[in-house]
Length: 191
Image 1 (cartoon, rainbow, N blue to C red):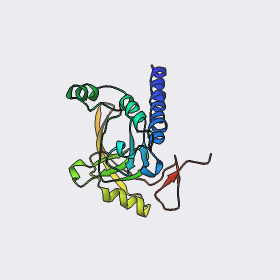
Image 2: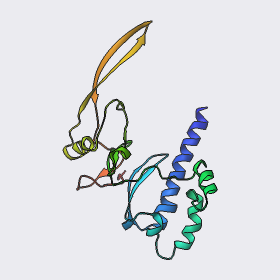
Image 3: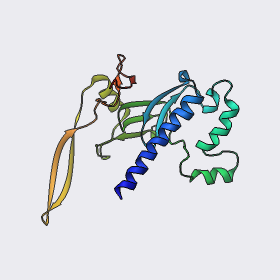
Image 4: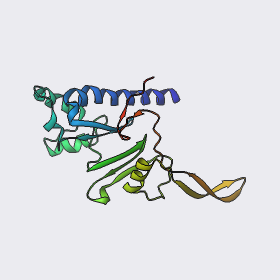
């Protein structure tokens, strides 16, 4: 039912907001992290240290050790690691690397020293196009929107047709937040 789907979607958004404000923002001073991208099922942020434990606010570390177990998988035993790996609702490390280029919602490139570990999302663009960090940086720095050609087949009225369609590729337009003067940082909308 669509009502159930909507309810789960709203719950996922609420859980993500609770995680950000009740965990990340509460236990870590803002000078030690920068939110990069958030969706209903993921949150990317830059951290000034290798682990969250290293940047917990003074006086909150003991409390953090208890709260941490409610939000993240346990790492104390092999059994707990295996069990929590599949436990829904816990936040698991999905990617760790050296940098992030975010253009807009669901359009980002995460990179590291090992290009095989790179990860990207390009909403609306076929995975057949091989995108690189340089493609994302080019759009970010020039604000030029490249076009891409999609080719495919469609079955219509008992006949097979091929098509070629030109469409805009990566875009720098981000309507969910306000872009600051440095051209890279964002803040909330004044609405």
